Image (cartoon, rainbow over all chains, first blue to last red; front, side):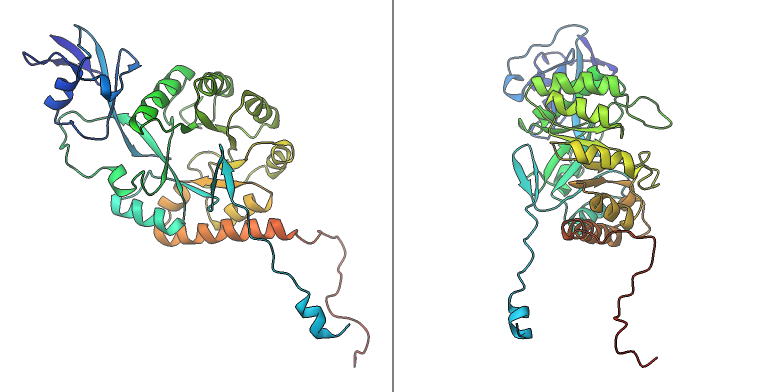
Length: 67
Length: 273
C-alpha cells in the first residue's frame, strides 16, 4: 500500500497496516513525535488501532530549535 | 527628626510580583527562542544563562531515515525543566498555524500554552494580521492559551485581546533584524490600554533594547537572534537577563522626568566660589 509520508511517497511494508506499526518501522517508537493523518491529529493512544488507507497523507513531526 | 530615625524608616522596595500568563506566574520576564545556535550544547548553555523559564520551539517534520537516536532539542531543554512554547514559524495562513499547534499540543502531552505567528511576507516576516486574528479566534475556542506575535498597531492588539488571547506580542522591529525598538510610541499605546501581558517579540538586538522595552512598561521580552547571533551567546544571554531585570526595576522605580532646562544636583548655598 502506498501512502504519502511527510510529503513524499512511501511504500508500506507487507503487514504494516496501523500507525503504530508504521512508527515502529521508522524506528520512532517511544520518541517524542506527534502524528496526523490527512491533517487530523491522531493521539498516540490510538496508533495501535488506527488503520492506514491507500493515499493517506501522514505527517510525523517533532520539536526543533526555532524563535 | 534625627538621621538615625530617617535611615531606619526606609523600607525595602517590594519584590517584582512576576510575570503571569494564562494563570501561571514566572519569575523571569525574559523568554527565549531555541533557533540559530551552533549546536544543542550552546542552545542549552545560553538558555540556562538567560534565566528564561519559557523557551519557544518550532514544529517540523521528522527526517525519515535520519538517526532516530541522535540527541534532540527536547533532550537539551527538557519540558521537565522549562515551559516549552511551540510556535508556528513558517506558517503563512491560519489553517497551517492551527494545524501546527494541534500537532504541538499532542507532542507536548496536552500542553496548551502556544505562540501564534502568521507571516505575510517572506522578506519582512511581517505578520499577516487578518490571518492572525482568524487563527487566534479558532485557537482560543479550541482551548489554547495563545500568545500572539503581532504588529505594533494598537487597534490590532486590542482586537486580539477581545478574542481572549493570553498575551499580545508586538514586534519591536523585523524578526532577526536586531534593529531594536523602532516605534516606542506605538508600544506605549498598546501597553497603556492592554489588559493582557504585552511582550516585545522580534527585533531586539542588544541589551539596551531589552531594557528600553521593560522601561516602557512591557511585561516581558522574547528574543532569539539577539542571543544566538551574538559573538558570545552565553555572555549575551547573561547580559539580557540583567537588562530585563534592570529595565523592570527602573520601570517600577518610576524614572525622573525629562526636562529641557538644567537642574543642579548640588546646593548653591555655602559655596566658596
